[in-house]
Length: 132
Figure 1 (cartoon, rainbow, N blue to C red):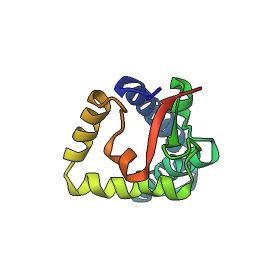
Figure 2: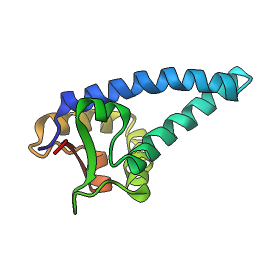
Figure 3: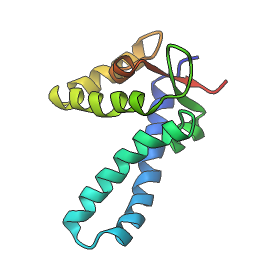
Figure 4: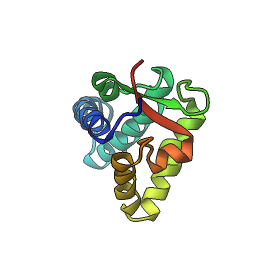
């Protein structure tokens, strides 16, 4: 069953909390200056959202806690690196070019569409579903 807006939002919020605390600690050890901390934090956050679902079967920490996961719509397999690049990088570019309007449209799509797929899901051929 497709995961709706609130489950996805809760997972996003949990990921933000978990990642921000973890990254704050990690960047203290890696980076010396304030300017470098922002770049290191952004890079590590991007790598978290890109790689963790690939290596953890479609889960991030927040998604695992909320009982939802990302999967390919074609064969229901976990996403690969190419899928996650489409989902995060290309969709991020689309959202940036639309000045955030795409994010609002995606939120409405997840809230109102029967299949609960957002723009980034269509770009990458994915869906977010509750655990089996």
